[in-house]
Image 1: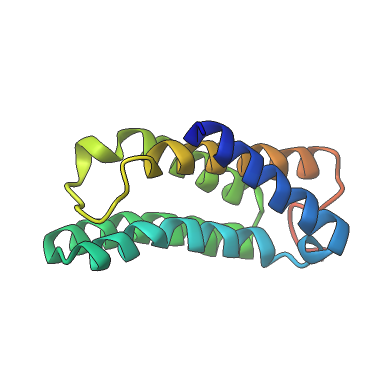
Image 2: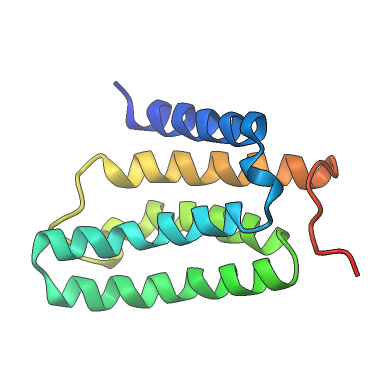
Length: 136
């Protein structure tokens, strides 16, 4: 099965599940998703046994964690940007970091997941079904 299709389908499932169950009523839900998504390349570096890759991946993760902090504290549109930005990172990742632990299908899957998750959150924010920032 196509990695892009699976990434889109899984992101839609998680998005719909979170809506139905109410998990996304908490402002921490989508920032947590971004932290998890961003840290998976770190996990792959550990699994691949590459310290060089881990150092490079941690630098990339730090960028997305900064988006998480600002987005959670200020405005969830930063989380949309972070998720979409991680999708772009997935696109260029194979040319940036030699990480032996990354499955060959992962960048395509993760790109599709990230962009779909960003679109879902953007839709919620645009429709005001989820507040972009905390009241007050």
